[in-house]
Length: 431
Ligand code: PMP
Image (tube, rainbow, N blue to C red; front, side, top):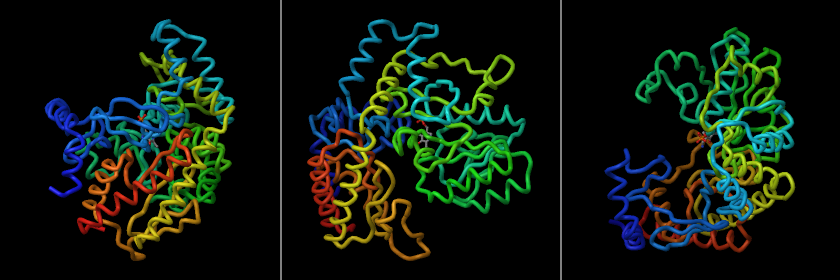
């Protein structure tokens, strides 16, 4: 056992005990792949603003922020109040509520491309529904996605490669209904749409780091070929700008999928867009009978969060903190003579370790391996992950998702904790 793992085990005795139960209850011992950790997962107890505490009482600065849903930080008093008020009035009234109207109006106020919408329970469902609407509206089958994009875990969205899809439980017919193109390749899209007439829609992951020419190109090409353009705004929605990636890039998609921030940290999603397309959701069209559609708790949290985002500089604050963090981490990597850099868009900070990236360009991604550079090994990254947890950072070492509650002091402390983590990994000879 390395000194890092040893310290981790010493700091988390209660988590280790609970993990023994988790191991027998859940496949892989966890309920989400990103919560997996070797030697055992950490069990979290509570959060407040930018901080979280685990069941052993260890304190963390939080950069997973509810997988990106908590841009307001943990347990924001206004969200707590909205949910508690509704909780006492009933959590499912099996009828329409005024809350769903307020929630929908809040979305429309922020995202002009949304003429009509439907609420679902997650981002996965929102993308599923966008595909269904696009297929039903166009009368065509195929959906184009870009390689490496993540659009939730439904059969269609998860299609990667017909050879491996079956292992993921995806039927061959579904694999055949998707066309997977190389990432950020507008020429490949032009070629597909000029040569085939069975494409219902193209989906773009709004939080992919892409150049404006490419994103605007998507709109031009799809418009020319009369193909529906779907923006997956599950992560970028209400974060990249108040109106998401579409606002940042100035692009008007036909359909958008939302979740995460949309529901103020509770489960929830929405598909929205052109009214004539959404109107396909009907008795003789696309069916949508979901028990928790627009449930009052998510509606209360979501309407409150979106109102705050509209009226306060929530996204701006998170972005300023992200800029400060990128700057601090870049100075740190230079000082420690580690090639790479902190980069990324909006209030998400990515870190490339061992592989160079142009940190002055918000649209830059690390150079490909063919251009040289040597990324650190996955073993080193795993050690760094544990070392950062030991120092009190709840983050993946290569990706931080900021909230509006992180202060300059938190960011500066984070850089120092990252320094301590890197030093520990250097001590065991992995960096
Ligand atoms: N699309 C994107 C871009 C996502 O990042 C995610 C989840 N992280 C999803 C869709 C699926 O959302 P959910 O986890 O709410 O089903």
